[in-house]
Picture (tube, rainbow, N blue to C red):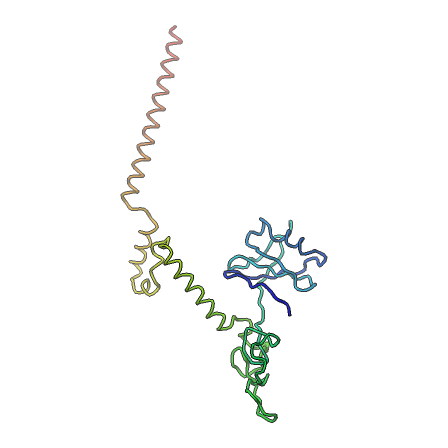
Length: 238
């Protein structure tokens, strides 16, 4: 059984196809993970094929990536979720099941089924009346609920630690969406303008400073011009 390093949070995967199969792992790393592809963190070949899986920093997968002087089309990596046919639970396979002694029907999910039981197909991912992993299942490429719940818990704990560690950089980040929706649109727009734009007094001071600076520069240029004219007149008279 092979072991794999889990991808970090806030990352996404993309797929590129048609890459030369003779390239080694070091060559792929040098050609993909460089300054021309700043968001690529890792590249991995799927078995011995010409398809590569790229790990990107952030949740956005670009349309194209650079491979030397060429632009290669990149698509989002949609992986079908694993379902255990031993315990009928998602997110793991039967060879790594923690409950290997569980006896459940692979088709309908009934535990300890008899030989002649009425077997109606039921999907272990969505609970609909079709076999698990069917092409008609709309949930086979979606992240399971248990995974989404653990991700939400991690993000909430991380947000709580950030709030306890220091004050937020943006003053309006503590305002919830309920507060925003309960406030009229005109007041929300005014508050947003006050946060992003300087005050009228500071704008007037900056305008007055720029005007005084321009007047001083014009006066200095006028004095230099008059001094040069006087020196020319003295030279001619002498």
